[in-house]
Amino acid sequence: MTALLVAGCAHQAPPPADTGAAQQIDLPGWSDQTLPGKRATAYSLSAQGGRSCVLARAEQSASLWRRRLQLAPESLAQVEFSWWLMRAEPRATVTQSDRDDAPARLVLAFDGDRQRLSLRNRALFEMMETLTGEAPPYATLMYVWDSHAEPGSMVVSVHSDRVRKIVVGSGDGQQGRWLDFRRDVVADYRRAFGEPPGALVGAAFMTDADNTRSRKTACYGDLVFRAPDASLLPGSLQLPQGNKPASAS
Image (tube, rainbow, N blue to C red; front, side, top):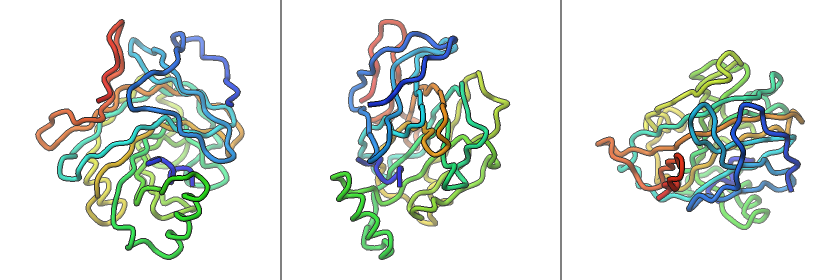
């Protein structure tokens, strides 16, 4: 249910001691996306390990930091992203609905032919549009960190088969350092949904701790979308370094 909102007052935990002083986020095109009935995760600009980052602090909360996009499927080849995990919850796993929390997620929303949706999904989409005022995306692909699931595994959401999660790392042995990822978005989407993707219409960072009623902290680095010729695509996020402004075209 949470991820269906991507194409569309938090109690903050104290910042970790090794994280730079947090600042209010002012990134062009990006905004907070709250969820019905959920406390909001706090997102702010900070620094960690020599890199600028979006700091996410979740305390029994779930919300997204997102932006809208409009990238044609033929223009998109790869996505590059990174995160630094500072606090995880060993009980959390995206494989169980009652413990479906993750310290870090990259959520990508895609357009498509809604007439192909099942009757169940159409009813769910109509309910979500009534609750939030916007229609959910046709399909949502997440890259997630999980406490237990095997890296490379794919998880179908229990709420809707239009939401699929690819586990890119697991456990707690890699906390406390930057982890960099590069993914073939088209291949991952085909694997997840068995068809080519439509336009990429949204992207979001998400750190949540509502189901396990716990705390999680993570930092997100640059988010880069690349064309087949490896050129940078609009909508990529390059965070400010020093006094330079952020680039989020």
